[in-house]
Length: 282
Image (tube, rainbow, N blue to C red; front, side):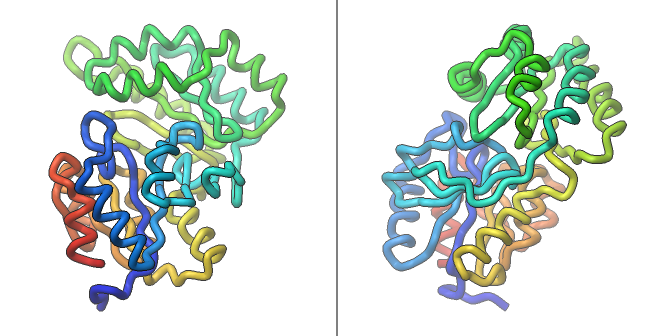
């Protein structure tokens, strides 16, 4: 049974959790985090984003020095970009999967060494995705390096891929016809595992990789018991870390199935839910 003051570390998801719908951190959340850090709590970002997608200025302002990125495939010390742990999809496997996926009408993000890339042919698909907020579209357009021939780029790099993310344009009936096709492709590769990170996307890493595993490795590194941690999130890629942590907190804006599996539910990301969670548990 956890009580106030028994937690030493808090892992926060970004999109839909710490960020509001404008991809900003509210002053109320900032103030609550700074106060908790001043009292001795360690805060960690836990995100599906790559290192280059981290809000480094905000993290520096708050005093957050660690990040579990790409759903746990890479854990970094910030702002040094020192990679503490990394598990990648081997280059050949990534190329095989990519060549299959590029036959579909989708937007693909590829994360390598903490950097983000997207095939140039996918930009049009991104702009046509109605369900994706403009702030996220803008984030993707401004942070992805555009690559003409992604398989050739990977062959030249000959380096493992931390994660790939797929976003799908809607069909006329608001379904996502190429999403099921992408799942069929990914099911042919048992070496990887996929889930949804929000907005009907698909994200895949090497099988066995998760934010929860990233948290366990970071806790060992920091010599903090994982039982004395809180993980707060809003989507399927947060479930594992919410279960791994001592306390799993879901945002009120999380899907019902995520809220039902959480230990506690806080306010939504538009209502300073992170600050409310800190107020209750720290």
